[in-house]
Image (cartoon, rainbow, N blue to C red):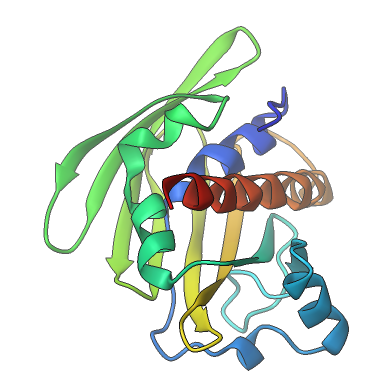
Length: 202
C-alpha cells in the first residue's frame, strides 16, 4: 500500500482497522444510484456523502467510502478485528497493541510514521459484531478522531459491502476541506488494503 507524508493520510490509513453502526443497515441506506452500484460491482471504491454527522450530513473534517469485498462478513470482520497484525500490510503503521480488552470495548495503542517522526495515541473501539464498530480518540497527539466501519452482507451473504467513515481534527490549524480531500484519497487506499488482505487470508 502506498505510504504518504500527509498526517491525515497516515492517520486514516492506520485507523482503518478500528470500526459504528446499526445492525439493520441495508445496502439501499447507503447506495442510491445504479452508477454507484456498477462501480462497486466492478471492484472500484466509491465515495459517499454521509459521514458521522447527527443527520448523516457530510462533514468538512470527514469522509466516507465503500468497497465490495468478495467474501462473507465473517472473513472481512476477521481482518478488521485482528488489530495487532495490521502493521504487516500497512506500510505507515509502526505498531498496534491492544492495551485493554473488555466485553464492551478495547483500547488500541498505535504508532504511525509521519516523515522522520512517529505519532502515538490510543483509540477506543466499541464493536457491534458482526455488523459494525465505533471508534473514537481515547488519548494522544491529535484533537479528535471518530468514525465507523459497517459490514453489510450482499448476494446471499457471499459478498460484503464494506463502508468506512472517518472524521479527523489534528489539533492545529488546517482548513476542513484540506482534511476532507486528504481523507477522500486515503480511505479508498485503506479499503483496498483490507480487500487485499481478505483475499490473501482466503
